[in-house]
Amino acid sequence: MEATRILLDAADIPTHWYNVVADMPTPPAPPLGPDGKPATPAQMGAIFPGAILEQEMSAARWIPIPDEVREVYRLWRPSPLVRAVRLEQALGTPAKIFFKYEGVSPAGSHKPNSAVPQAFYNREAGIRRLTTETGAGQWGSSIAFAGQMFGLEVRVYMVKVSYGQKPYRRLMMQTWGAEVFASPSELTATGRRLLAEDADNPGSLGIAISEAVEEAAGRADTNYTLGSVLNHVVLHQSIIGLEAKKQFDKVGLYPDIVIAPCGGGSSFGGIAFPFLADKAAGDKRAEHLRCIAVEPSSCPTLTRGQFAYDYGDASGFTPLMKMYTLGHDFMPPGIHAGGLRYHGDSPLVSQLFHDGLIEAAAVPQLATFEAGVQFARSEGIIPAPESCHAIRAAIDEALKCKASGEAKTILFNLTGHGHFDMSSFERFFSGQLENYVYPAEAVAASLAHLPRVG
Image (tube, rainbow, N blue to C red; front, top):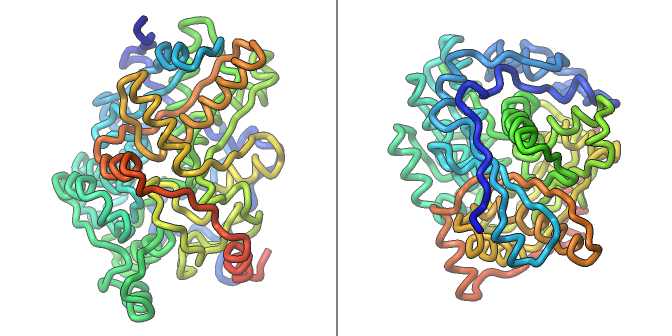
């Protein structure tokens, strides 16, 4: 029996993004400047255009999607919602398992959903160049693609360990015209300082952010773009869940459980927040809805971090954000889900988790690859290592249904394909990958350096 694909027409692409801030019982805490006071638009305007800042600070429930952005979205959106029938059969579960497949985008992941509007708003503001960071390369390739769509130069600081692990994503960026440098690099004061301290520094997303922000702040023609964490990024990703709701309506179903991988929080918020809107509105279908953010046990931000103000980067260039964090100088191991190697989490995701409205789970590396291989052998799609975390949790929930006999409907975000991650699968098959649980004393040492504010 073939998997069921639930498709929408291009006319069904949402006309507005959904902003969860409008429905949060506890509003997110404001970002703070270096003086410990709420950051002003002028302080953040050095690296972001005005339209992005308005979205970052907005509490409006619906934000219009510009026509030019929707036109580029039409290259791959709406993305399919697929019922994983073969996986259900392999598991012997009564659960219905669905995945929203974001790997159909030009960059092969969900990241262009935010890269395209960010490039558009920067072009409209007269900006010529963009800087950014990237971990596994999904965001870097997405902003390189989006920059090409709107005629912008792009420079990407790629975490050094991923720069070596993911050469084809680096080549994707270069194909779309971007410059790519391993971070830490010799191009910035931050990079030079860290390399002087440790020439073999493997890099981190926090370090790469510092380099990209440092460069953007020093050039009037250049702005910074971020692929996750911030409110406007999560806002743009809401298109995933909004489409999924329309697709479930077509078949008369509604999910009991919504699952996504969680590094900075954009893919989780993107699929889960539109369903949480139903719960906030009192929709009976969402009364018992569970939303689960899945992270690596080697970078356990939500499950072992502290809810506190912290910098979004390693050098303290960004405003302070109230979020679950492992400390801005946390140095995660070089796991192969590079997009999840971030010390903090979205302030929106963090606040909702703190309020008990969503759940979090941490899973080990080997179990995620086992789940990814099982999914590939059932459904034919080779998933990105990040996506394997959601697959692991979805399989676990489906097996609970098998044990209890409950026929729940499970939705997970398949954030991208793994075609450029085959070296990771090679290491898994050869037994070279290991589980890594970050030591409690190392987490405590990093948290001891949290800024004393808020």
